[in-house]
Image (cartoon, rainbow, N blue to C red):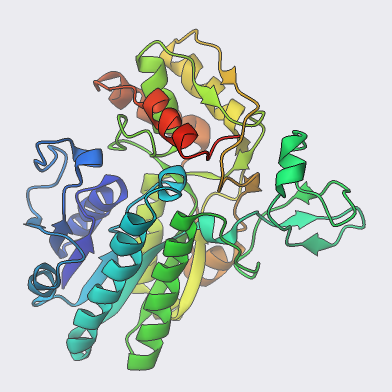
Amino acid sequence: MRVLVTGGAGFIGSHLVDGLLGEGYEVRVLDCLEPQVHGASRQPPDYLNRNAELLIGDIRDREAVSRALDGVEAIFHDAAAVGVAQSMYEIERYVAANSLGTAILLEEIVKRRDNIRKIVVASSMSIYGEGACRDEGGRSVAPKPRPLAQMERHAWEPEDAEGRPLTPIPTPESKPLDPTSVYAITKMDHEHLVLVTCEAYGIPAVALRYFNTYGTRQALSNPYTGLLAIVSSRLLNHARPLVFEDGLQRRDFVHVSDVVRANMLALKNDAANGTAYNVGTGRSATVLDVIKLVSEQLGAGEIPEITRRYRAGDIRHCFADISRIQSELGYAPKMSLEDGIADLIPWIQSQQSTDSVRTAVESLEEHRLIH
C-alpha cells in the first residue's frame, strides 16, 4: 500500500514515516520545509528516511496536493502550523495553513475517493480547552475558560460559577470542545472537516487527539514548539527556563513512539473508523516536574524563572483519559516520562540550538498577549 504523510519531514511525521517503512508500506511525504522548523535553507532534514519519496510543496497548493495523492491509498494528515501563542497574532497564516490546507486536501481526496482506504488526521488535545474537572460534590464538570478578572488576581486554578476550586481529572473524548486559541480552533477544523467530509463520501477516517508529544527531532530553536524542546533549548544556552503562571499546570506528555503506535493501530483497525481518540499516557505531570527532570539529566543548574504572568490562549490543566483507545484499539503507551526524557537527552546534547524564547516573548508583549 502506498501511503502519503503530509508534514512527513516534521517531528511527528518523520517518526511516522519510519514506522510505516518498517512495516513494508510505500511512503510519500508532502512537506513545505517550513523555515521556522527546518531553517532558512529549507533543506530536507538529515533524519528524514531516504526510502521515502519526498515532494516539497505546500498543503495549500492544489497542484502539489494533487501530485502527492496520485496512486495513494491511505493518508496521514499531519501538516500544520503549530503553536498556541504565535497563532494568536498570526491568525491568517494559521487559518490558511491548517483550515484552508485541510479543505484543499479533502477536495482532492474526494476526487479519488474510490481508491482511498483510510485517512488518519492529527487532531489535538488543545481542542478541549480546559480539561475535565470534578467539583466539590464529586461530579464531573467541563470548566469554562478562566476569566480575566480571575487571572489578574493570580488565582490560576479553574473555579465553578461560585468561585469554588475544581479538581482536574482525566479528560475523556466526550468532554465538550471549547478551544481557547486560534491554533486550537484550526485543529478542531482539522478533525471536523475530515470526519464530516469522509462520512459524507464513505471514506474511512480516524482522528487522533495528540496530547503533549515529545521526542527526538523536535525543533529546539523554534520557541513555539513543545515544552521539552523549549526547556532544553534554554538549558543548552545556559539560560533559565521561563515559566508562566506558577508552573503547576498539568499536562500529559506522550512519547512520539507511542503516538506512532496509535497511528498504526488506527490505520489497521476498521473499528476506529469515524471515531476520535485521545493519544496520551493517562498520567499527568506539572511544568515544573518536567523542567526538573530535564535539568537533572542534562546536569544543568539553572533555576526556572517563574514569571507569574499569563498568556492569552493558555489553559490550566489537560491530561488524557485513554480508556477508549485502550479498549477499542488495544493501544497501550510503553514509554514513561522518565524513560522518555532519558532517551531524549543524548539527542539534545548533540544539537546546536538558538535560544529564541526572549524574542518570542517580546512578540507576545508587543501584541499585548502576555499579562
